[in-house]
Image 1 (cartoon, rainbow, N blue to C red):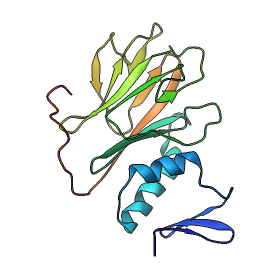
Image 2: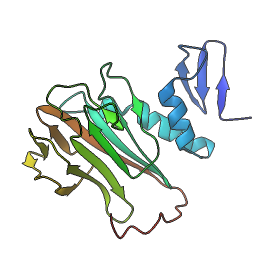
Image 3: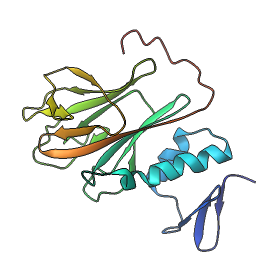
Length: 185
C-alpha cells in the first residue's frame, strides 16, 4: 500500500492526517512529495516538520526553512502574499526577491527584485548572500556587505530590509550520495 492514501474526508500521508480541501493535492504538497524519495516513516517526519514550521517562530510569524533529506535539499517558507506554505524545488541555491523569477518571490516594497540568495554546500551547510539590495540584508542584526556570505544556523534571525524572518534548518538522516564537487560552495 502506498504512503499516500485518499480517504473520504481526509488526505492521509503515512500516519499523519490532514483535512482534504480539494480533490487534487495542493501545489506545495506536489512539490514536496516530488522532492523526496523516502521511506514511509521519514515521509511523515518531513511533512510534519514542514507543516509545523510556523510553530517554531519566536520573534515573527515569517520563516524560511532549509530542509535536507539525503540529496534532496529544498526550502519552505510562508513569505508570500497569502502566508501559505511554499516549497521550492530541489537545489543548492535559491534566489529571494520581489521578482517573480525568484525561487521565493516576496511581494514587499522594501525587497529588491533580486535581494539575496540562500545557498547550501554539503560541507558547510546553509548560507546567505546579499546580491543587490540597497536597503540591506542582516543576519542576527549584523549587516552583510554586497556579495558577503554568512553561514546560517538554526534559529537565525534574518532582516531583509525591514522584513524580519526566522531561519530554521532541518536535516533528516538518510544515506547520502556526495553531490558534485563542492569546491566552489
